[in-house]
Image 1 (tube, rainbow, N blue to C red):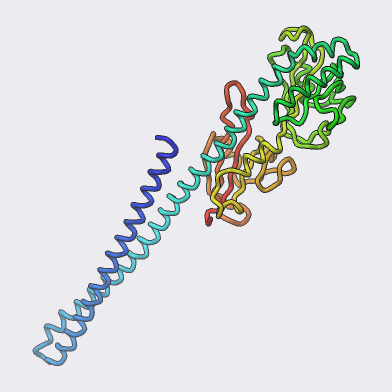
Image 2 (image 1 turned 180 degrees about the vertical axis):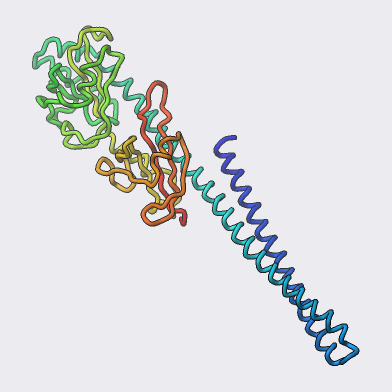
Length: 350
């Protein structure tokens, strides 16, 4: 059964339970009304028996018993009404939570799936562009003219894409020797030797491998939020050639990720109180509809339980309110996965 069909089935059950609640309430009300009439009849019978004196004594006993029976019926009907109402309300709450949790966990999965699919393309980009002859020639010739031509070539690539802040070419020591937007970002001459993405590509064994650094603010692009992918530039552009340097691509993470969490299809009356975010396995917030991306850590009552399953939800107390916390782990695409988590937190009184 698909998620949509599952949600539909749950909604149908909720409707049936609600109808049952109405039917039970009506039946109990009818019993109460009949019992009230019986009590009144019994009272009138006792009055008439009293007027009849000794002749009505036996009838008085029957009327008294009718009143006692009516009192018991009234008590039972009241208990039934109270118990039925409480249990049905609890059942509706469980069903309502299931509907909400299923819907929100589906949205969480959609968000992280979009990210994984899109970022898979970045791994393909960097491995392909690292074989460009202008980059190989620049790192071989090591001349200003060759570096200048490489910058122009990187600029041409950037003009065809809107998802990158910049592309940077580095020598084996980690010094930036060319970049695609030199007029906008003055990164040439900067050292990235300690950067995670540079070291990963420098230490790679072939051009089929790529380096990666998670979301961070990069000084190479004036402190903007990026994801960095990298690949070794090798002799002849061959996958098994000797390493000449490293190409780094600085993906515009902030605009991409924030657009996804900010446009999650949440109802207008739920949006303000609902938090949509992407975080890594430590809880570090990478994207956040509440604006704490790259500067905060997600704290939940039971993140270990949630993060250990591919997809699900729990009812938890968050910020003093009872909330539905929905989660989905990155499913991966082709051979790539971020391993990140998508979380949506929504108060249940929405």
